[in-house]
Image (cartoon, rainbow, N blue to C red; front, side):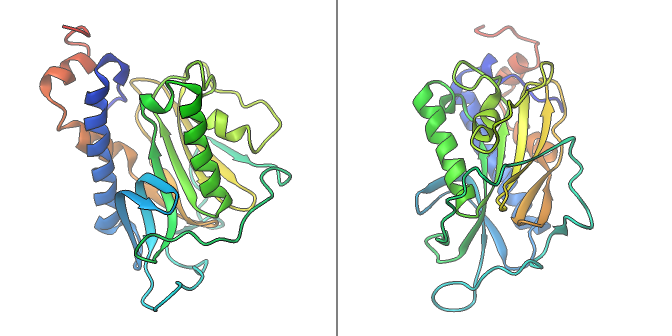
Length: 251
């Protein structure tokens, strides 16, 4: 199923789809993708973070959970590097003030990763872009891995997409966004150093499966296309007609 141009419909329609997609991602993660001891929740507060999907690691001990061992499930980078077209490594001189604070959910279980789906409201003004990017950066500084799904064209406040704004904090070099593939899905391993695994696509393209990191050297493959399709099936026909070109916008 091709990725749609959600600017053709009202913001509330994308918001409804967004909620459905988040639920499908949660269901896929809890339906067998995550190894034992891990689980996913939607739209939860975790300290200063409010994310679309949280991946957490549970502890059966009282008090603070123990450090997460490198072998806690998932595919090892050394054995199976993620099959993406682009990988970037952040300069070690950037964002070096890493804090040692452990991030935990209200359950006291350790927060491992965030999944963030960019909405039009995240891009509509400079302060909203800055707020969104600050959340991603803070998560990475605290050792929380992040997946960023940006299916909206770059705008005035993010001329290279939201990943471009994020990556300005990790590299002096100019980040170039492909002209014909302006949508970005990015998976960040918190490191150090931070590493970004990227795929770009255009409207009408197919979403790739992307690595969601559970540890800096271990990940699972998140089925973006399958979950997108499952969520899209619930979009009302009147709006699917607009998104698929059978009905002009605004009619």
